Length: 123
Image (cartoon, rainbow, N blue to C red; front, side, top):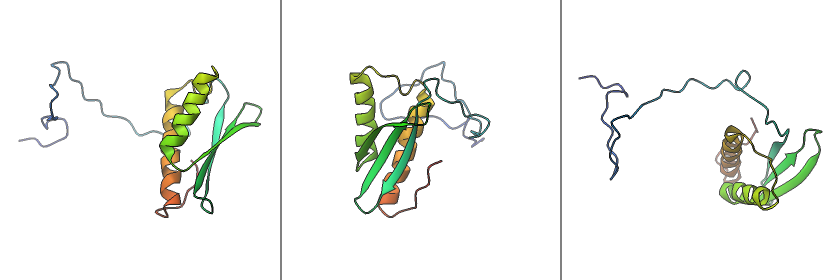
C-alpha cells in the first residue's frame, strides 16, 4: 500500500470530505524571486524590546517614513490592533494577504524571542 501523503485517507473530527477534494502541493517560496511589494507602498519594521517584554511594529510609507508604531506583548494583540485600526480609519495598509500573513509570522517569531526561546531577526 502506498503511504505517500497523497494516498493517506483524510480523517477529520466531524467534517465530511468533498468528492471534489483537491490536495495541492506548494512550491518552495523564494523570498527574492517571489516577493512583491504591496501596491500601497506600506511596509513594516518589527523589533523586540526584551528589557520591557514588548514587541514593536513600525508602519512605514513608500517614502520610508515611520507613520505609526504599535506596541504589545503578544503577536495576536498586535496584528488584531493593527488591522482594527486600519479598518476603523479606512486605511489601506495591507492590500496583499501574503503581507498580512508575513506580519503574523514575524510577530510570532518575535514573541518566541521575548520568551528566550530564540533570537529575533526580521526576514
